[in-house]
Image 1 (cartoon, one colour):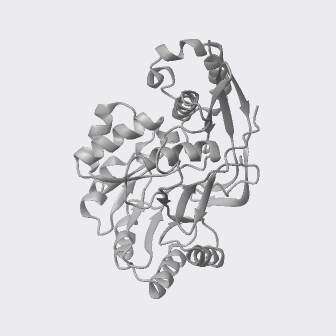
Image 2 (spheres, one colour; image 1 turned 180 degrees about the vertical axis):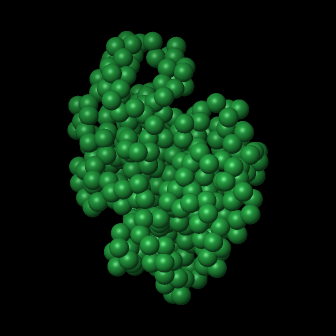
Length: 346
């Protein structure tokens, strides 16, 4: 017999998080606990306002429904029951995976969770004025990051370009891999020139140079770009396998970005991976500003994928009210330690 309950706990950013869609100060989050006797599993539903498609005003009603009908969950097709709630799909999937293991928060046992394997991650540089961004970059390099991802598209492009030039003047592409994430911050008319300027700086890739749902324009950009393009927001809201195939075949990007909590969980992300690999499209996984509950789940899953690319996983250090976890960094390597969990949510 299963029991379930949920709680809301919004995540508070230590520093304002600047993106091309605005500045984030907090992140609405809910946690679902599914219990069977003394065993329990916890999943996280965490929303990025303006990006996540889960309708926020309906999440608690849907969670109440899930809790009331939790003993029917094994009969559910989560994709159908939660078709408009990908973050909730991710939440239920991870809670059930957690419940299925005798050790709490151990979803995917591996060399990573045993502490003998690490995951290389990129260092994330948040948008801000030029001086603030430069300071962040210098901090990441001192910490030992070899791959840096800069959020761009919010301040003047000339200033962002000068930052990228500054990095390249001091560090070659063999020393520092540079990725940029525009979050759709440029127009289709601006993008070709920007892509050319990025090519001159040996930029590894640009995520979502233009807004999603401009498939014709994105197809043209991907076909002619001198700088590899990675689709990110473009994938959100697509769950039908035929629609996934159509997107990848029509646009034919160089990379796709996998954020399980925005795509509907790990099974959905794995379907994207399979389809991408069949079409010689590269990929990497990334978290989407989850707390350590969601971040750890994504890191454990990512460790099983055997990718040799730097992943876009967080470090758990963004929020002052995060949950204590075994995740820690050495340089640019993410490890899962032996300290255990301290989950005081329920």
